[in-house]
Amino acid sequence: MIFRQLFDQTSGTYSYLLASRRGGEALIVDPVLEKVDRYLQLMRELDLKLVKAVDTHLHADHITGLGALRDRTHCITVMGEQSGVDVVSMRVTEGDKLQIEGIALDVLYTPGHTDDSYSFLMGDRVFTGDTLLIRGTGRTDFQNGNPRAQYESLFGKLLRLPDETLVYPAHDYKGDTVSTIGEEKAFNPRLQVKSVDEYADLMNNLNLPNPKMMDVAVPANMRIGLAQEEVRRKGWAVTAEEGLALLDRPDIVLVDLREPRERERHGTIPGSLSAPYPDLQDNVRAGGMLHELAARTGKRVVFYCAYGERSAMAVQAAQDAGIGAACHIHGGLDAWRKVNGPLAP
Ligand SMILES: [Fe+2]
Image (cartoon, rainbow, N blue to C red; front, top):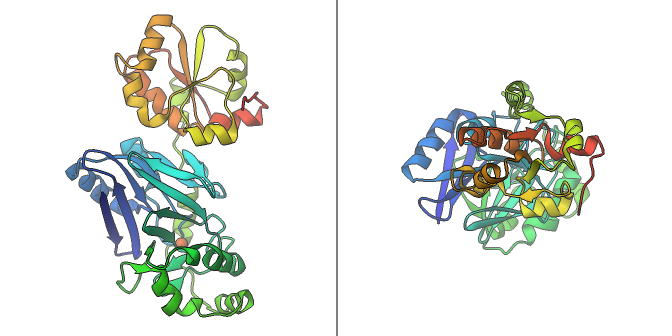
């Protein structure tokens, strides 16, 4: 198991790099834009392949590294379902599992600091974002923050984890690096309240100044989506509407890049083949499943995913691997739904 806690001094942000083994797949939680070169260097040194980059919530105090990491590693960007960002590759919700090779994180919806705040539980440790900090809790006075929702997230969810669970927050300004649920229950001054009203009162009277970076960071973090326009300009995209007309054509094959849990939850385009994005390189190289399929049948490969990010990256990879006719559905299943495209369970 590889576990690294990385620190950005400017914003006091902790980022976490996880992998089950050297040479394997990696996931990063709450990466900071200015530190992206450092993360990439460390991953090269440890021989890791970044497959997922996750933000616990929309940050107001630093610019996220999600977009830059996706552009440089073609990883999947992940945020919660409620997040207002323009595009991420994948959205998760309470009860989901966030998986890479050898690691599965339980997804906990823990709103309050923001309405898109999530925590991620990995066995003996929990990544609490800004919901639970060491001897503190994330402020609740902007970005749809809500002290009552936060009280529920803390007392109803996080504090019910075993006392020895390690707490890894998104921030610390005092230099503390880790705590435990038991320790926070006993010593976190914000948690020594008797009721939700008392907690709301406490949080509503903090009178904190806005974060220095807020006016820059929030708008920047709202627009982290992949520029799918470039793929469209190359003629490698169809709109969802054009996709409808392709449905029953014998000369195309629709390829769904999403993971099993996403397919279960949102349905699939009828007749599509499943080939999850993490296996893409194996599938498109010469001898790979999609490469052979395209070569043997002459069919045009049409990729799709949730929002068009993974599929836009897949088209590029397929084209690079010599699958010349490959294209994708611009905007993904999200766009498909808007034109009332049919879905199979
Ligand atoms: Fe935050």
